[in-house]
Image 1 (cartoon, rainbow, N blue to C red):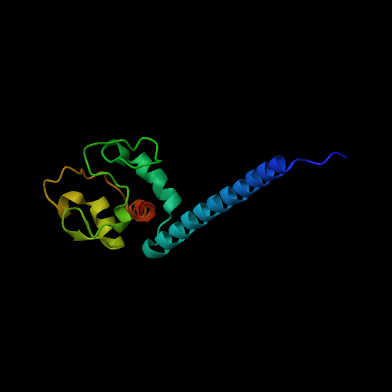
Image 2 (image 1 turned 180 degrees about the horizontal axis):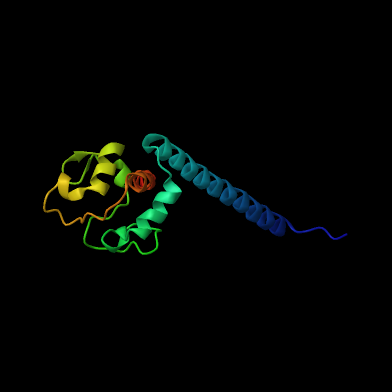
Length: 138
């Protein structure tokens, strides 16, 4: 049985180590996303996965940009990446789950004349959309 050269051995070892590191990074990313979803669901009482579907269904992406969400390429409202870390939403509300839901459901009541329209979002849908938005820390 022929032996492999030191160069080939270290090349194979480097590829294996790179593969292990890549799997580790992917695992940490998936774990972090799952923790964010659980935390957002606990904070809001909503379902972040359903919230993403509702975000798309209500057409929120026609005004707001949001990375990795199909149809979320709008340029009218602010981009929503990092919204979970903002201190203020809707121009003057503290960023809390109940305020986020109120803003989503009735923006004209919160800030009369705002460009954000009242889309008739129901209570449960607003809770789920808020849960989804609270997964958007980056």
